[in-house]
Length: 141
Image 1: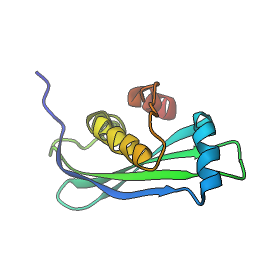
Image 2 (image 1 turned 90 degrees about the vertical axis):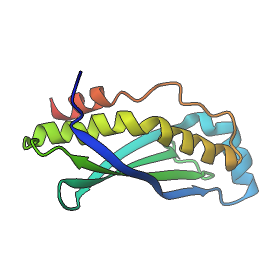
Image 3 (image 1 turned 30 degrees about the horizontal axis):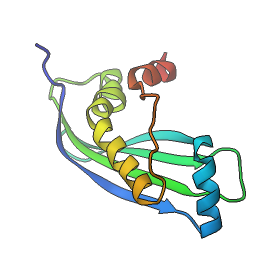
């Protein structure tokens, strides 16, 4: 049995945004949303007593530079407490960028897809699952 290196104390949607400027844009985006790309950004901020705020931002946007585009973004905040014995910076990075993400991502993705559906873009699925371990290794190895 593995010992958890961190505990999620709380998690919540910090910010959520869906912008479609007009009906022409909505109709255009509805036909072209398959060209949109998902981008993930993770930031963290130490609070106190080994408590860290981890913000995971998802943006779903048109990378082709179309005149008519909608923008979608969510910032999901996780408040975590790190175990006392963790001193190694690399271990901490892996916790923040992989372990926490693997735990919260299903809820985050579900909230994001619900926002897209409620914004008038139903039936969007992210077929490729995010591999946080792979992203971490690509960035730090």
